Image (cartoon, rainbow, N blue to C red):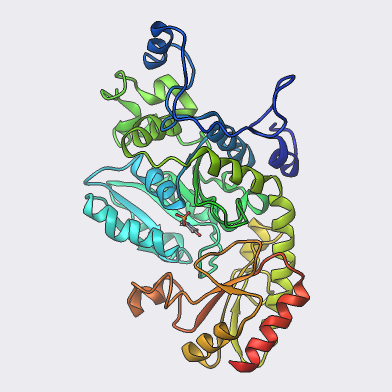
Length: 426
Ligand SMILES: *Cc1c(COP(=O)(O)O)cnc(C)c1O
């Protein structure tokens, strides 16, 4: 499918029915797969034959959707996980162990901040949080001999920092480390980080990819470009035999697919965060219309951002589509078609006004969700980021009065009318 445009890939990649087979991707809602002889099944375990045997490792529905997402990002392989959290965890843990160190953007999703700053620390993996806007010289100081990965978001949730992917990729590569980019907000429709030097892409497919708030899911995609063997000692999990998996050396046996194969055959096998086939089916329906929806999200968000920016009660608006936004130039370079439908803004009346405003909305709903067909709103300081102290909030780009507005695909005039009546009461 790789010669087609992204709109076509969203419809057709991953599932090519043969004559007489279902046109739509079937839901293989089965834990297991049947074989006629014991020997046939034995060959699967010995890796002598390809085939399905247990859904924790592989399932045809899940694999078709993973292949579609790999194609959308321009990667060589992908795997789906039961959540975006699991995707980021696996993406890092696949190449890190106790005693290692990772570098992560401080303006990042609250869940990722906790994962790296708290939970991975308990597993012996240290993390340094960086301000990705700093110059390369300052950022270089964060690297240590045991640094194994750099992680950042294309457009950060909720601060909407646009990543200079080329700058960070060059820096990571100069230190022999891959760059992992969480591309949830931009989606491959607006940005494909591999084209700018990122090595691994992750997604919370819960967001735009699904788009209808029907399933929680994640994805990890490998570009196949990082040369693990060039730093063999550092990435010994990929470059030396895995005794728990037939003594296979992933890079030797699977080449460019080594990283994803290891994530599936080791992490999925042992930790088991698989999505259900039904959820993958729902995700696939969302993917079919992703380019249409993303285009409308961006169109509506631009209108809403311009409206808010001109409103007397609004202190400031973060949206890279606004010419006065700090990230406008970076967005033009990396996302010329638009960024995403998420806007954040601050009311002059601060936290109290933010709460009054939110409680007065009629069309937009207060939900812990974002990047959905329905316009929704959230107050990060009292919701997603409430476990952070003021200093951590500031580093994450979240002020106490910040409102995160996820502009849906309703008619822009209706969304703006709702905001207008709520702002009157704020
Ligand atoms: C939501 C989100 C996550 C976590 O994904 P879940 O599917 O909720 O586990 C990770 N990264 C970003 C950028 C997100 O928006």
